[in-house]
Length: 141
Image (tube, rainbow, N blue to C red; front, side, top):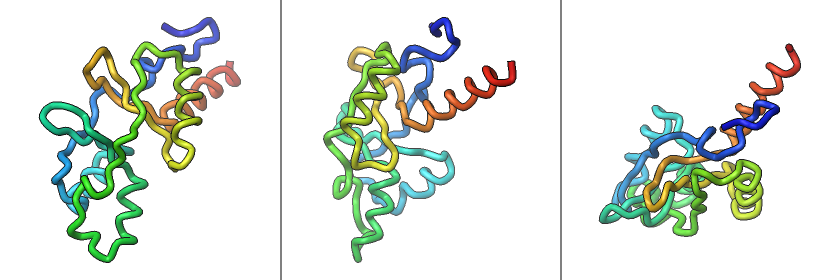
């Protein structure tokens, strides 16, 4: 549902549906092609069917600082303190939470959940693209 101004109200209206997943024992060097080919911001790290962390572009870039980066595993760099935002959260609330909690990341993001299931991801880039489209349509009308 969109508000009267035509801009989305809820996280589920802008999120990426589905997420790329990997395991903690995946090699960082093996993830890089997926991130590039699929234009990924983050991947969810899974173990026994449960999310245990996330790894994103920031961590992949920082891996190069380590002389042993070619042998690093996802477990060496993943973040366990990732954000979880319900799909039916207001976009305004999600942005506020993402700004407060992701201030050390270049790509503020959150994993979107529907009940106990991972439904997708929401990133600032989704919000800024949507806002840009909305403003162009509004200004050209």
